Length: 111
Image 1 (cartoon, rainbow, N blue to C red):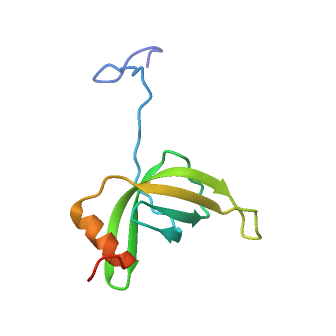
Image 2 (image 1 turned 90 degrees about the horizontal axis):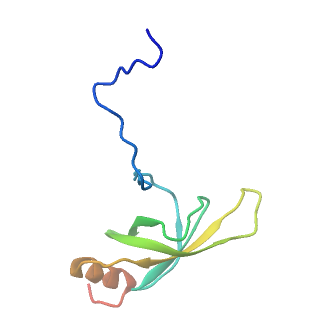
């Protein structure tokens, strides 16, 4: 094979702007506090301000999936099991049905 010989069927393109890759991964979190506007989470997995995720919350047989955006992150003092990260997140716009289920989970709306 000759050096510099192009073997691709199509040309490579260089993209000027950074691109985004979205991967579906699940991380374990503990919900410390939740309201109609947002949630306070703690996790062993580091999160960053601006991260977006889908929170799946359940109480008993009722559950809801809500889109969140991380607004604040802090690191708790390291323990034997390592660092824990606290993250404050807001709910991004939700449907009327999602809001009703969240209200029911929080006990602010009759079941």
